Image (cartoon, rainbow, N blue to C red; front, side, top):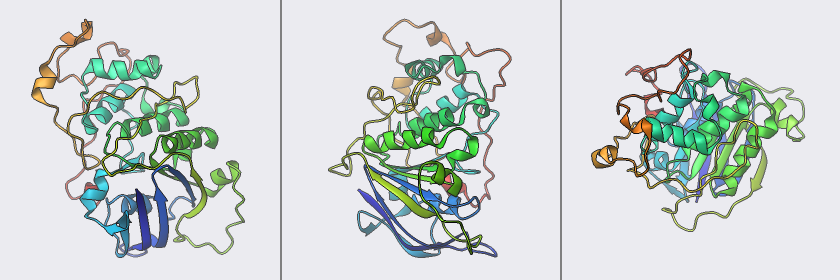
Length: 316
């Protein structure tokens, strides 16, 4: 599969949000685009994934212009500032529970615990998401985004803004691409230089110059058919490499087709007892946080609601 942007431009109220841009990336590819903050990163991420309609130009999936909803069903945006980034006050357990629910997965406290245990992150479950190392944060959010088996393309927006070595989140992106996903990574020019990209000084560049493709790697075999399920990579343990793979996920409930749209779990599956004894099974279903979370950890019952008149509501 391939997504192609041809002359895509996004107008703003006074200035362009994104100047005319041509870009293409396929499943199995890892694409790095560089540009300074404010140079259209958010607009590019949203328009490339069907979450924003371009003012001009066309976005195609496998050569055909498709409905934005069809494009959203095949894509995920990770940690886009002001759009899909989690509230910094949420704990890691909160974020995992929400991510599993959005992907159509069961998100009971015991499911969150199991997900964290498989990635050696149990000790960090009560930490605020803004306290996580930048590379771990990116790996966790990317792994949650790809819990949805319909997702074939992932956009990582400015992971360098959270600190850490660029090689860490770049390895996460390469792992995703090696699993068969198409990955678009947006970063600053300085981070691209840290990754070995030879970029000339930005002389004469304007504020509206769009991010530029500076590296492309083909790492995984593209899917043979539209409905193929990707092999999901793991979020890395804090003390280990980000690229560590994990086993295939559990059978999915009906996948979410839009970022920010919660999926209701099947009632029968929700009430079905766990096959193996687990003291956490007695916890109330409406409790988003495991009872083992530290007492001094701020707990938030839900994410901040998005205003109804927010122009980026569709992005959720």
